Length: 428
Image (cartoon, rainbow, N blue to C red):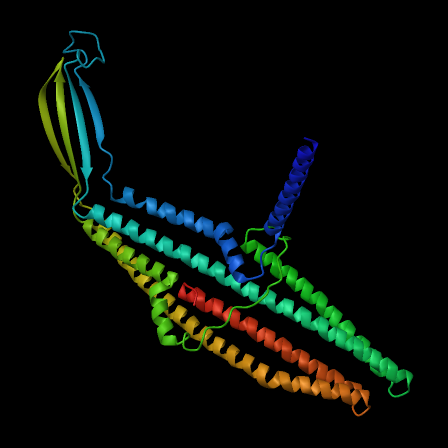
């Protein structure tokens, strides 16, 4: 029995330790900050960004306007108590059975043929335009996240590079101090190395400040506290192939999928429907009614009624028609202007991506190897006294500038890719 109790206690302890470990791993996974890749940031923004949520609610509200726009007005009920004193033979009363007669009237307003359909179609097109604006807002948010992620990647890699070069300058300072102690160089070399290190430490402070600003901007897009931590970005997305970025193919996709153009197109169609509705207002609307008349306890008379409004205010209606025509022209102009601007931005960003691709290849294949060879040669020459310290610093600055340009052009390519995807309304 004691062995059984001991084994049971051991099993419970092992189970408790196992559950505690699982809970710790789960808590760590939950607390792991986002930001390692752009996809995790986009997923978080999709669920939490308040601007995107606001636009979705507005689009839902626009959808709910469709049914009321095409519905008939509510019917009306009217009740008349006639001859309350029955020709002066009784005191006034409100009992329908005691008055002379009671008239009940039910009326229904009926618009002219086609007006309800036009109003419903206008509401549908406005709802479609609202959905397009939702997609447009999300594309803008996604583009900002992708661009900010690329900038954070640039800062992170630039910081690592600066620290590497700082270590290199520290080693150069040691070499300069050794040579100065041996009388092979001047104290100026040591001082220049120290000044260079101070300048780079100042750059690290600037990079940290800029990182704080970008983290704050990213957290605002993710609806997180401004001081919430973000993980270091691990990698950038690969740029699409040149065949994927052919302007003619992307132009067709833009005309089909761009949410801004779709929204403007729907607003233009809605303006056309409003113009047709303005022309329909030349014709009258109707009101139909039926009236049963009660005498004491029975209905002995029935009346039918038709009412037509007379459209006499033609000057007012012509002004409304001219207004609708002007609004339609304005909508068409906005659609054309948006199309021209979107296609211009598309061409500009495609060209910038190709330039970034070529510059990255040139830096990787030509400039960076040359800069590395120059630095190695300068270091070897300085140790043997063949070159001065200024030559080594120039070589160090050259390789640093080359690597910075490489990181910068990669980040620029990602920003341009984000703009192309924003214009397309979808990822490439």
